[in-house]
Image 1 (tube, helix red, strand yellow):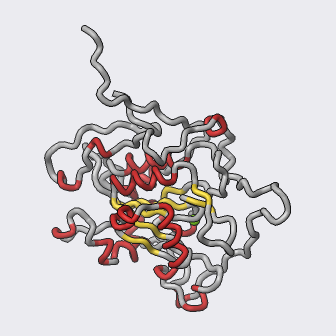
Image 2 (cartoon, rainbow, N blue to C red):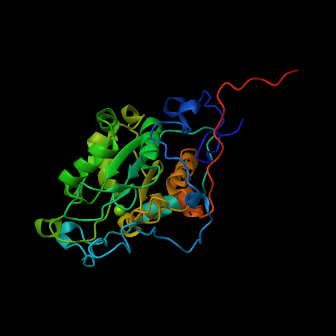
Image 3 (cartoon, rainbow, N blue to C red):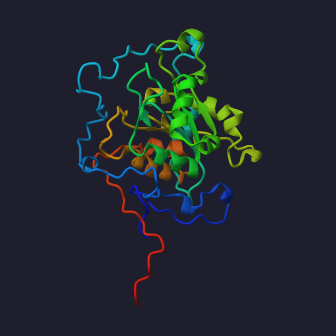
Amino acid sequence: MSAAGFGYMPYPPAGAGPGAGTQIPPQALSFNPFAPAFTPATSGQQRPHSQSRSRSRSPMRGKGKGQFPEKRDERAQPSRASGGIPNPTPEYLVHASLPPLLLPHPRQILVVIDLNGTLLFRPSRKNPSQFVERPHARRFLSYCIDTFHVAIWSSAKPDNVRRMCDQLMTPEQRQRVVAIWGRDKFGLDAADYNRRVQCYKRLGALWGAHEVARTHPRFDEGVRWSQADTVLIDDSLEKARSEPYNLVPIPEFMGDPNEPGYILPQVHDYINECSRQADISTYIRMSPFQSKANFMLGAPAVANAAAPAA
Ligand SMILES: [Mg+2]
């Protein structure tokens, strides 16, 4: 049977055995290409583009005076009081250096998703709640919420994060997201909080938060989310500095509604593969995510197709 939508790779059915309670029902592992939020592909999206083009051009560019995205100052480094610049721990690196191991079934993972530059583009700081959604953003987010455990983590201020999430998710979806974290969750001191400073998404902070930890399927057995079962989807390499082998780095979205390469559908395929890994950090180290400019969506599966005549 062919896979449904978005170039999705089929999985073997989940079977009994150790960890069965954490497995994902196979029917949950595909997009429905006819879901209401689906944006049909345009001819512009299907054209192959150069691999070297890593940033999507903004539709705001070149359309007249006053419509360019605001040019902003370079980011400063955070102070020591804000935690400084992190590096991976030796334990993290040793753990990630082990060989990857494919599981016989997909399992639950924690998917941490950035907002600006990843799911959306905000053209102006003066209107922080106005943004352009990346192609397939809602479907991708819905898929992740329906299939995995999702945390939203943005360096925007909490009010703006809430406004963006209000637009991207239904109230019911927001309830199911394990955490929605904004700028107040980076441990920044007061001065850094209010200036353009480089933020670091230390996944250890997320893993240690009870609201997140308690969502692990084996929490009662003492198991916690870790580098083995977490992905961070972000357009910034630097933000993932402390856990680089948990990052799914994607090109920064700058508002192009005809973005080449179907970035989020490709991320969908990649995180599905991550869910089959015994340790995600070992897999990402060996096979990091790389978007393909000529990626094409897979043909939708036909439900209950009639059996061929005998
Ligand atoms: Mg970003």
